Image (cartoon, rainbow, N blue to C red):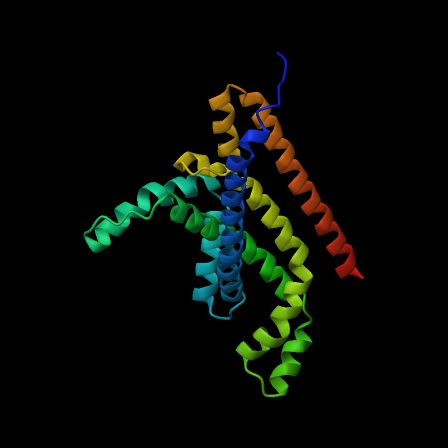
Length: 223
């Protein structure tokens, strides 16, 4: 079968809208995931066994189930839970459900990255800060976490690349991300193979370029 890519250029506006959706999902998922993951990491590092066990159970649970299941669960099951709690139909929509799913799922992975980053900081810094009269919260916020985030930036970016690729799973709830936009455009003009090839090339270029950036950052921070 002969390939014809002439229909790609007219479809660029639709593909670009799909890419914007993909980038938006990734950005919100990463920001929310890092925030929740940092809280979970501090809970896991806490001397309070209840908090540490709750955070550990959360991490182990979400790392043991596929992301596709999480997306589907938030899209289908959460409205039923909200109806049971409030007594009213409160649909959260496909976009919101995907954002929440990405945040909750990625938080489990970001938690372990942040925890490892915090543990890599010499413990003497905590003691020195407390000797100067700083509280635990001040020490974490002003001394430990800034150094930890600098060290774990490459790992955070690497996990963000994985999430960028995983956003393609939102097709299950009908969101038009870049891959879904490519598939739909290809089906409309009868050139599905060509559009999927282009989509694959775009994903590869972005992911590969981001991976090179991660490697450069790893070398820079290692020095």
